[in-house]
Image (cartoon, rainbow, N blue to C red; front, side, top):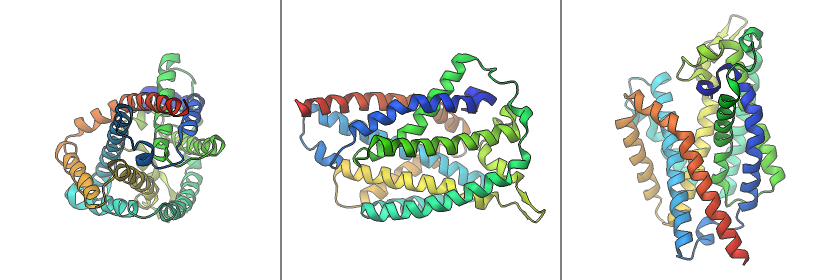
Length: 313
């Protein structure tokens, strides 16, 4: 978003939020009252296509999150440890949680949510003195085309995780509340990045959200705590990986959880061999991710709409 929208990216979030509302409505409309496996139990062409697309989508989500997590750990926490060693415990713990029932996952997610909320309030309250109004001026310098592109990127990334909960029926009102809270958190994060660093400087960091935390200094005593404050992003990745691994097991309908561990291990091996140490490949994945998400969402939505209409007929 910073590459596309520069210091006007915060404006694009407002537009992107409005663009994303129809997507949230579609998620709510297409949400299932049963598991994906039961809904697509019949082996006709349409069901097989939807299963294949959902499986590829969930694998891409895992692949993308593993890249983000592994590069982040390699860059800021364990630069001298092999990725396979540093990341395997975290990923396998997410797989282990996915083997539990939904109430257990929900309880873990709730606990992590309140920890995240406390960390967010602390972080951004401490960064207020570092905000500079001049970093936002002049407003709207990127043009309407780039602004719209940035808004689309936001809408895709903010709404695509809802496909992980396609078989957890919730109302549009509930989904809209969650989407609004999510958009607000991202807006605040981007607002602080631009306000503290400016658009140009923010783009020079591989993880500007982490770099901005180095500004925190409480009473000239509490400082250099960015590694601790960044754990809330790891919590988000953890829950997303848990949901994605659970959906893969539901679609493939296998009994042994060993297969899920092997899938994660295979993705981690690919990441450690072709992504870590070759930053060009990581940048390439980042750049194409919005196009991949857009393609998946449009095709999956289309097939699910066809499936729903055929079921009503």
